[in-house]
Amino acid sequence: MTPRALVARLRGSAFRELLRGRGEPPPPGRLLSRSRSLCGASWQQRSPGRREWVQPAAPYTSSPGNMKSFLWEMYNETKKVSEEHIFPARAYFLNPDGIFANNEVCLSDIEIYGFDYDYTLAFYSSNLHTLIFNAAREILIQQHNYPEDLRNYDYNPNFVIRGLHYDVQKGIVMKIDAFHYIQLGTIYRGLSPVPDEQVIEMYEGTHVPLEHMSDFYGKSSHGFTMKQFMDIFSLPELTLLSCVNDYFIRQNIDFEPVYLYKDVKEVIRDVHVKGILYGAVEQDIEKYVSHEEQTSTVLGKLIDSGKKLFLITNSPFSFVDKGMQYMVGQDWRDLFDIIIVQAEKPAFFNDDRRPFRRANQRDKLHWDKISKLEKGQIYKQGNLYEFLKLTGWTGSKVLYFGDHIYSDLADLTLKHGWRTGAIIPELRSEIKTMNTEQYSQVVVWLQGLTGLLERMQIYDDAESRMVLQEWIKERNELRELTKTIFNPQFGSIFRTHHNPTYFSRRLSRFADIYMASLSCILNYNLHNTFYPRRTPLQHEASLWSDQNCASTSKYPYIEGEAQIK
Image (cartoon, rainbow, N blue to C red; front, side, top):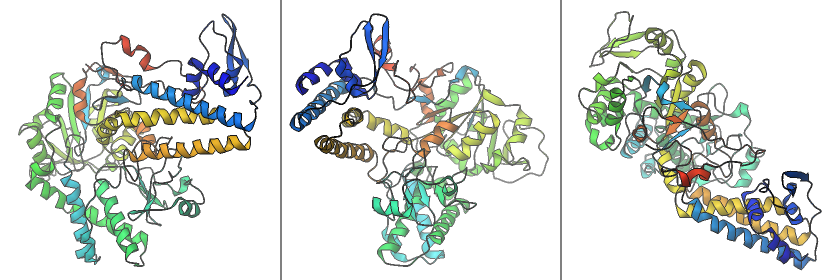
């Protein structure tokens, strides 16, 4: 059989299986041609109701010219099919305001809703990160004698992303996947990328051993050399670290990366602890606190449905009170059954020795022993064990929302059995990017080309290897596009080229549901059940897709979430 005839026989649904990258059983009553086995072992329909598993045929052999022609015809046909696939794929856009489930959650079972404050109830403008960066930079210069030329560095909100790891001893920031592998092309020293060859030499490959990773809460303590920057407030810190590193490198100044890290960590802490951030926000609330999120409406909806609400935050009361009055109104405290400030999470969830202490609106403390938690009162510190004892709010009837996967959610999931919701503001912009035609084109063709490479690698002659190398080069370029479309330096916070990021792995482990903001709750009724998709494992066939029933639904298809009310 000639290569052209072989390509013709591969067209149709069998070829689309090639595009998807995995062979699937053919529909009943269909006899697959022998050419289908070019792509690997497959099921063959010998007669209706009877199938047999057959091994792949011997690799196709032909003259070199014919082999090259055959491979490029396969390439062109795959590309044609992928281009045809883009239009229907774009009919199934994701909803940026949807709620996504890692674990099944039925809101009918939830009686009590808990909240963090920063980046959960309150969202901030980009001015806040600029404030943190500038204030910390000034403390470095004035109190730690760092060079005044550091003032030439301004805060760049588009340089780093959340979830990155920082090698404290080497002064390098990087993106690591769920399997502890560094994603090449996402390693920076200062503001400059580190060549792949240097990375491989420094780390003797791209794998980071478990003993070098950060501790459970992402910190570089107890001998760990990596620090993971997990919360949104950490972005100015990581940016400042990168800028100071960059300055010292460019000026050929000898420095110890460990001390630089500790100095920057200390000044960032000062910005928070010494009240610089809190004071600035309270004095100009409109500049820093976003009024776009519908926090008041969300809380009102929950109250109207008879739900109990509580607040556990690390922020001081005066700061929270100012923001909540701006967003919700002066009577915001009436919405909450319990208010706890300066809780010192994550210690709040683990240390059972710290008692609660009552405070007034001016943050003045009382000395009386706390035997019950009352509505209308303000409590400071304490611990979750005492909280559970005094309230009886245990188990899966409680749903707590926070933005920090470790400090807010991890212990609640692993130790206390509460349901957890992660607030990931970056989710909204990433979904909007994924909904673009450019992204759809790149991803669909990347999948098609990857499937083609997987199947055609059985050809081992010299000319075939040259063709395959061209395809591999193109695939690498496509993978780079899927990175830079989100962030030129580090890409998506959820994916490396093909694996989930370490951030994404922790998100799926510690958050039952996740969303861009609390406002997403307004799209659902409070009896809604969020179902995680049954994503096929690598050894499982794609027997079902949400898209199969999309055309019969009166709701717009929104992948990965329940139907919008």
